[in-house]
Length: 283
Image (cartoon, rainbow, N blue to C red; front, side, top):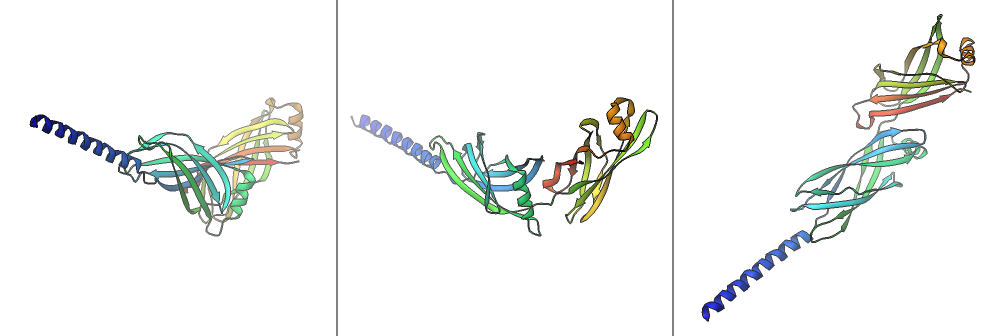
């Protein structure tokens, strides 16, 4: 009888010890230290006549001693203390203990809002930002814990180069072809040079398509100066209609439309592979 009692006591202690260990594990899993949010970069990714697309690059760090699962988060962005964007990321991921994850999130601004922000840049080109994120952490013992985190700081943004049309002229006539010269004046308001790797263009005259192409010629914009970029191209006369050909022969280029784009290739992160549009109408 004594042996049976001892055996029962042994299994009772063993069961309770396992339960205590499981409880301790659950408690550790339930306790989730806030993930650390670090904004690495806010870069320009695309610009058109109505909107400016930015990329918010941030790093999420797991400071816990156990793996956490992120089931998505909402985020909001303020520039210069003004709310400019709300977004949501539904991507699910697992962060190991002490692990980091890099995320690239879109920010879309109206073009007018972006211009206002650029005008508010101080002399150092700094833009104050505040990013708030409501992160959903989904663990075995802690379902859908929402952790709010805020990151404030300042970003140094370059000023965008300003392109304009300086001249357009038919420079040479032949029997079958003619040559056209388009001169762009591009100002660089920054203290550092900006490199252009490619210029794309499309030219319409009197509502009719005339020319399109790409100039793959490296151009360096000198700091705080204007730089002239020449686009010299040739076109075939037999491919033009009589009306369009007549305007060109009479050098009547007062009703043309120019759509062009500058592809920037710069060491500055915000200007890497940025495509800057140009739209010009002469009436």
